[in-house]
Length: 385
Ligand code: GLA
Picture 1 (cartoon, rainbow, N blue to C red):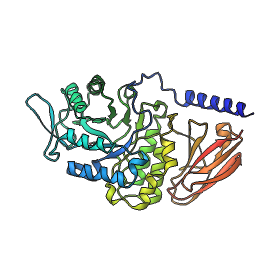
Picture 2: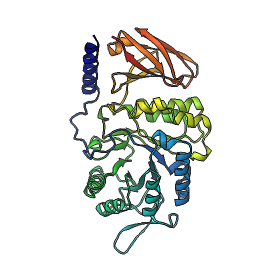
Picture 3: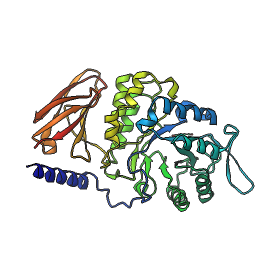
Picture 4: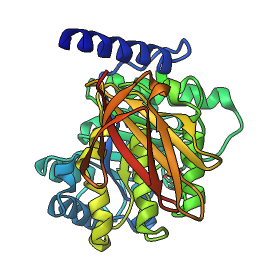
């Protein structure tokens, strides 16, 4: 009986992966990295162009103090505004905000068991008009490797309409990084998905810059969902950072985090960690929700049903045969939302609520929960038969 259950579970998972997750004849970038979605911290929203060696170190210390590093947020990414001029040999340098240089900052981060991420751009200048990598792709890749960089976010400024040029230049940076022999995650920030991205990068931004607002966050989630079939260990769709700056309620931030987790999205916090409210920290460190995001099966969730407009049910299969199920209520009032086990071929299953951290027993058929306005209910269910 047990064996039969196991074989069935395996079959469901394998078939599920084949059906849900077969990228439409796409080559994958095979650099062996980002086998689960990257987790870390990014300087852009808290600091913009006030980013500095000092505040990067301060935030790294906060990641340790608030146990965010322990929860998995291990890549510290210096976004735009760090670069200075090129030297006589054409090598990119750091500007005066990084007086000890990037190699020293990398050494500091590595000594604290972090990975070191840096930003550059496809064109000659970054979006904030600092030095970027055009025509220096291989050279910059080597400089980044020499500095001990583990992750490169590659932006798309200055804007061009020449799609072929974009593809070529992202390709050159990707190849340049691979040629260094150092494992470096390549994060494409082109503000839209292209079907060559999974063969070029480990993650790709599927939309423009996220706002710290409920409707905009939802829009990013929904756009990102269109590309679910492409996600797999080594390539992830990126709906942008966790911009937890105070523009939403705790309920909305809990939804935001859950939506990213059901999507197998990168979990990159972009907020000043010293000012984070306790409720926000609790959201960011919910181990069971993080475990859904980081599940090694690497399947991005999809919508499997609804209880009316704006009351949707999402699901992703997990590596041990469980499923994560998410109820999302976009309405201004609380609403009942239901999941029907038959949607996944299940007659009976046990239910655990990942926010209440409670087992809710065995359910046959339909499970219904009341979901607060702009809230979610996030479940982990285990098939019984
Ligand atoms: C673009 C990117 C952002 C950020 C800024 C920095 O807008 O999409 O994520 O990196 O540039 O200038």
